[in-house]
Length: 199
Image 1 (tube, rainbow, N blue to C red):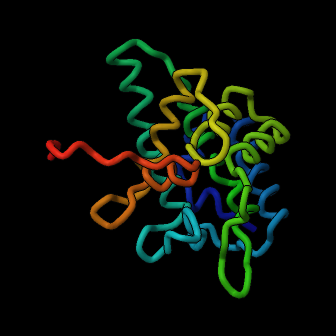
Image 2 (cartoon, rainbow, N blue to C red):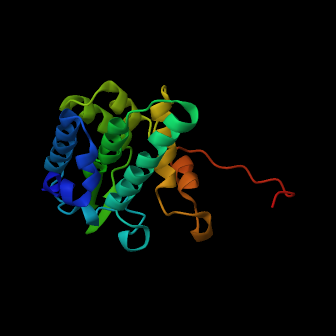
């Protein structure tokens, strides 16, 4: 069961001070794991079926990167700009923001594929509310990606968390389409050509 692997895969779970949030993290992973039991190993789930784990790392690695950056981001905003953010909320959001991908990624003809039209951010936010996350965390989840219908962040926490998503994927333009380009194209947006005089 995926929820039983959480503490081993994500030691930062123990840093969440609010026990209700820690319990909600486990409940969210239990929920998605029961919805699609083909996924049995957090370290084998890709960030997307088009991004092989062997080259781009697992969804778990993506989450660990967001946890690490959250631990830096929250105190930096407090120190430099006196903007108080909840580290508990950032850690909990990082831990579950992509959990609905467990439902989205299904086997078809022996291959893992993403279910067309499935909005993992929206579904993840709905599940988060069901398992007891506060609305602020659900909002952070619902707007964390550029995939699907545009939903703009309404809080500083949601905006900053949205920026973490593409940063924490090793998908760079030198290797083809970047993480940002992939996100935008998935939302039917195509980058215009760059001006000729730009390097």
